[in-house]
Image (tube, rainbow, N blue to C red; front, top):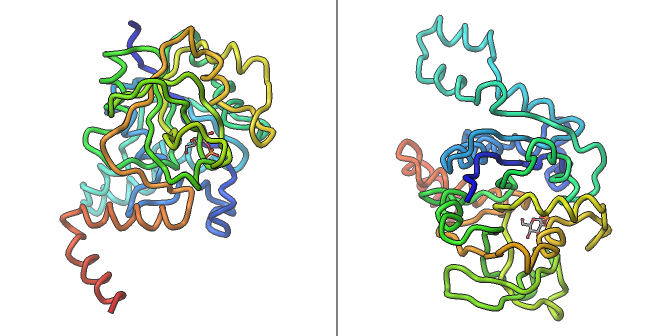
Amino acid sequence: MKPIRKAVLPVAGLGTRFLPATKCMPKEMLPVVDKPLIQYAIEEAYEAGIEAIMLVTGRGKNLMEDHFDHAVELEHTLEARGKLKELELVRQFPAPSKLMYTRQQAPLGLGHAIWCAREFVGTDPFAVILPDDLVKSDPGCLKQMMDAYAEVGGNIVAVTEVPRDQTNKYGILDVVEDDGRLASAKGLVEKPDPADAPSTLSIIGRYILQHDVFAHLDKKETGAGGEIQLTDAIAATLGDVPFHGLRYKGRRFDCGSKPGFVAANLAYALDREDLADDVRAEIADILG
Ligand code: G1P
């Protein structure tokens, strides 16, 4: 079994749900406490053993490239002021060639965004992280998936149960076998209406994939919402490539939604020794 050393992070979305904050700033740069979402995703990838990452970006996303580079003036000033802890924080970014960028030149869907990274992936298995889905867990969600991959190989997605009235927001598994941790499926449906959903087991933004998905993505077939769907590409490999949904341990925050984003900020702040007491006091005060 080939080890997984590459990850693709699609970050081309416009972030319209967070306007006006995202007018000039990529939504992936929104901070949860004091770290941008994209940095959580990259740290989760490295923790899982990933060595090279490709960000699939779009227009107006250049700030992310600046974030993962030297900020010469800032570093100089921090050094001169002896702020060594802060200096260390701004110097945490991957080396050249460990982090690469390509552009999705048209918003044709998640499957298309992944297809944009096909030359980077080549014939290797690879991971996908959607930075909007922040998973608070130790070890990280992708590391848990790597451990499952060592057991079963193939394609793996992270899954969680959702209320039936929300199946139209997710990729949903048509489950055949389920041991409570790993579920195998005979089908995958993107955003089915609750009445048509084969289950309530939904995909969250973590995938381990074999390069076989590109055979389907190459066809540029559109699916739900008129977009090229990654779910459909994975479904096309069922029967040829083992497929499992992993119920990860941890809590997922949908940081693409305002309640999820606010909840993530609270959860991460309440987990910080330097902040927890003050934040708890603030919350108590707000709640009266
Ligand atoms: C994408 C996928 C969907 C998955 C979801 C997880 O949808 O297409 O299958 O369940 O991410 O967040 P999106 O949220 O981009 O519409």
